[in-house]
Length: 397
Image 1 (tube, helix red, strand yellow):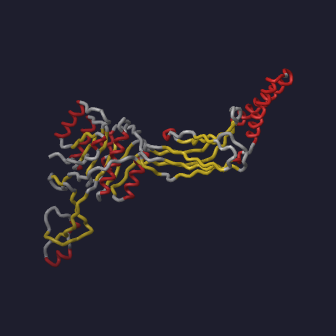
Image 2: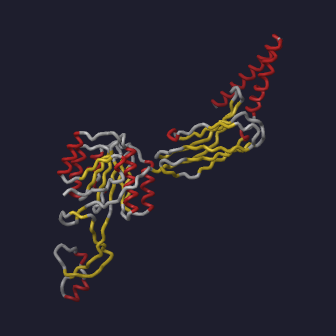
Image 3: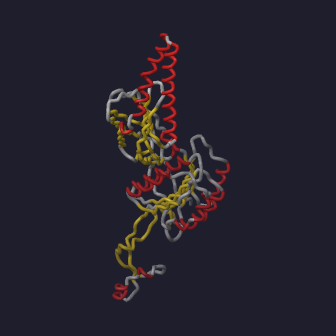
C-alpha cells in the first residue's frame, strides 16, 4: 500500500509539473517557455506510459550452477529477462536481495528495444556460511528519474559454502591399551564377530567369551580368541565460545576431519552452542559431508564456557576414541577438566589456535607447563602450521 501511495504521489507530481510548464508557456509565451515545454513533454509522457505498463511486461528466470560451494569459490548467477513487447526502456537496474555477507552489487543495463536480456551476476571469494537469497528487484524509469517502476520476482535460494581446509599430513595419535599405561600408536580392540580360535581360560577373561563346546570336548575351560584390529577413532570437540580466531578453528577442524577420514580413520564431532550437535564416530564420504555441512553453518554462539562443556558432558565421549579439542584460548578451569578426562579416557590432545601475530600469553605458557606435567598434550598453532599439526602429537610419557 505504501508503494502504491508513493507511486500515485509521484504520478501526480509529474502531471502537475507538465501542466505547470504548459501554463507557463501559454501565459509567458516566447521561445524559452515553449522550448521548456517541448523538451519536458516527451520525458513526462514516456514516464507516464512506462508507469502504466503492466507488470507482466517482465518475465525473469534465474539459474545457479550449484547450491553448494567451497570457501574461496566464485558464485555465478545467470539471469534471463524476457519482455513481452519492445517498448523502449532507458535502463534496467537489477538487484538481488540476499544476505549482506555475500556483497551482491547492482547491475545496470541499457536494453532499449531488446526483448531478451541476459545478465551474469558474479560474487567472487565466497566465505563460509549459509546464505538466504530472497527476491530479485528490477527497476526502470525515465532519464530524469521522475518516475520509477519496480518489479519484484521471487527467487528463493539457500547457498551453502563449506569451510576451507588445509591438507594435513596424517599421523596417528598415541593412546593407551585397555589394561596398564603402555603407550601405543593405536587403540587395540577385539572384534567379537571374528573368532580365530580358542585358548585356555585366563583370569580376567569375560564370561561371554567362553567356548562351551571346546570346554566340553577338552574338559577344561576354553576361551575364544578374536580378531584384533587397530582403531584410529577420534572424537573432535570444537569450542564455540565467541572468539576472533573462531574461523581459524573451523578451518582447522575441517582440515583434521578430511585428513582422518581420507586415511581410513573414523571421526565424530561434538559441537555445543545455541544448538547441541553430536555426530557419532563414523567413517566414509557421507560422514565427511555431514560434518562439513555442520561446519558450514556453525557459529560462535555458545553461552557456556568451554570448560563447563568438557566437565558436564563426558557421558557422550566414545570410550575407545582419542579426544581432540580445538579452542582459541587456554584457561585454568579447562586444564582441570582435561586432567580428569585424560585419566579416564586416555589420549587427549588440545589444539590452541592463534591468529597471525597473536602472541602466547604468560598465563597460557604457565598453564601449558602444568598440563605437560599432568600428562595432557597441548599444541599452539598458527594457520601456517596446520599442515604439520599432527607431527609429534602424542601422549606425554
